[in-house]
Image 1: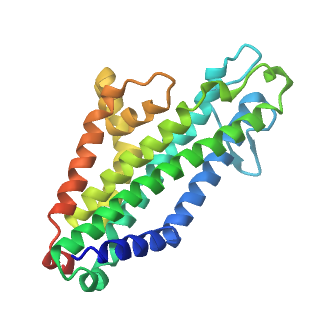
Image 2: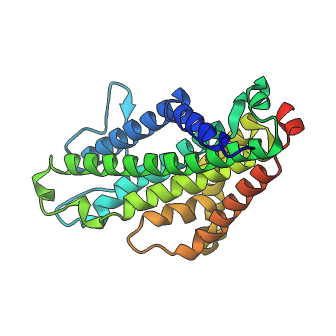
Length: 265
């Protein structure tokens, strides 16, 4: 790969991914659903909105009263984020791994192995940046929705979700990055995008909650639980290290092992 190719590949990849419809729709849906779900949940928890009607019901385990604390309020925003951010991160990470490889588009672009590896290295960096921005934006909008819902109840005038500072925003950004890079690495290594997407979603949504009940205290080391902990004011960073290191190693191995014959499969 010549030096002149590097800026062109970087520009092409950047232009492509900031306009990719699947990525944009996923991020837009993430922000909208997280904010709306949090707003409705807090409205129900404060009694400002009925929990049911016309066949639709919304229930929450938390009731916000005059005795509630800022952490009680923030925990409801974190619940939406920890539920939705990993799901969106998986979709975006798998998308960045490149389903278009089967069409031969990248086979034409990556005539040399080094060029192909550089292309995917650029893509990996872009994935981390976009996932981080998406996570942070989702957290910021969700916190704003939380504050708007809280303002409907005079009993909660003494509360503010902003006391949590930047921890939910930073945590959501880091969780999105780690999960997206993990999905990217697994997809790029196996070239089984649909399988990886389904398996990761099943694990995040169904399997890990079941494992958490079995492992008790050890569940703090599980990927979703560990990365979700980053949204707390004082997270235990050691818990997320195994997942973060695994995600980075898988992504690096996937990029380093790229060959034209594997792309063509």
